[in-house]
Length: 274
Ligand code: AMP
Ligand code: MG
Image (cartoon, rainbow, N blue to C red; front, side, top):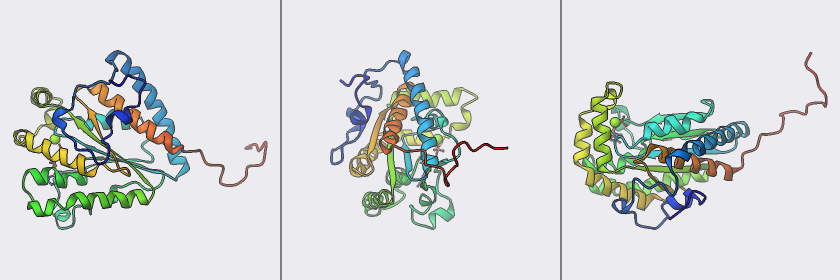
């Protein structure tokens, strides 16, 4: 088993070309970490992330796209709050994808996604994404199979285009189990502060749990590429989910080695502002 010192990136990435079986994966895994020390580790990573994002924004060279997927209540919103909350809103964008509008449905499914990919210096976070086209669309039969089966290749081509244009892509699948979802949905029903998040439709989606897991298996298997890898994040424990995502984003940005650029024009030595 991986200890706290070993790379979570390596442990959690879906190696391209391997078949994913979510059923055999542990949503409660902690990879040698414990809750007591996790807070400190994550806090230190958030400080790192804040500095890295400042440098990315200043350098105006790299672009980072973060995709979050997971079943209802898996913690996409919580991940954004805790991990992305450390970024300066300047240079950072978050977009949540909902049931497509009439205008969106009148276009191809990538049409509504493309405007939300990052430009240079930016980090974009997608809460749901183009992957819904091989998840809810597949499970609920919103398109014939012959149509949605083509989307995996289309998605890989789209992501390839973004990567060829200088984008770094990180895709996180937040894995919880069915019992954990029961507890979380029940809490949304019982807790007045969370009731706004609950929709009766969440119970219908839950009835299709196995179909969703099969759809996730296929999406992760077919669309984890060298250029745009998927990570499966054990997410039953929020503290581990936050630690893992913060760590993987920080290590990825560190590899980009963003640098504060030199001044736009030379500044005479000893210049004083009067
Ligand atoms: P939430 O993330 O809880 O705000 O819910 C958003 C809802 O939009 C979920 O039920 C998704 O399944 C649904 N949704 C997102 N994208 C699509 C899509 N392309 N087609 C149909 N439903 C979608
Ligand atoms: Mg919801």
